[in-house]
Length: 363
Image (cartoon, rainbow, N blue to C red):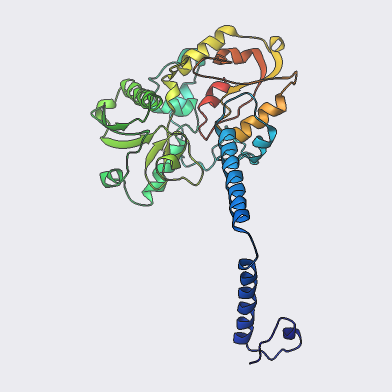
């Protein structure tokens, strides 16, 4: 029987596609048979398997160590091989705060905006500002609420059926407001950190209700929120969950103020409520010329290790840098928020996704 080879295919163009497939299949099978019959002694085969397994094990341990270690120094090779994770190190976004991105909330300005203006010394700690005063003082404040409302309006009104379909994962809570009172349906903290953040969020909502003169007439509504950094840590953007941060593609969720406006109470390092931090910074009032001409940063390298360790390596032994890792358990290298004001430059190298520290850094 005629068995064409690869060489004869060059000179014979009359083969059918089936003959060509049979020839290719025969060549591939022959190659695999040659590999299978390659003379490898059993001991050498076991040794090769052991070496490969040991190499893979060491590589896995090295990557795990590089991603989870909070030590001041790890070898630069580990810094290069650890994955970037959630960091988008090669992209950036510039926000123009004076204008909105899509301007969902439109309409004429309220009368309060023409007869009243925001004064920080007078109104900075006044939680009882009206809706119109808040719009006049902080244009775009309700932008994401209007955006989320428009998104869900296109799918019909929300109902308790959709809320019931949301699985309350660790770091989530469900509550409702009726008659101006806040009621908690379910809270699921996994750790003390979760518990403090959930309590801080609920306390902020309660304070807002207490400052609302018309709270008794507010309609009943129920909601679910998460205190995790990312939406996909606990749920997906198909559900109407209140969150601290979202990506542009996660249109189904609503942004809400984070827990730090009530209290950022780390068990081993008291940071305090946002307004208290602002007050302590105002009392320092250090002129720019008296600040140290250095770049300062404090944090845990294990959060976004590739990005943060790159910063640590770039500033190592440099006179312009004061970049150090912290140990929250012992307080090692911890720098109070107000003490950052002694420096001219502050590096913001965020962790997984949330930007809670950014509000403090911008003070």
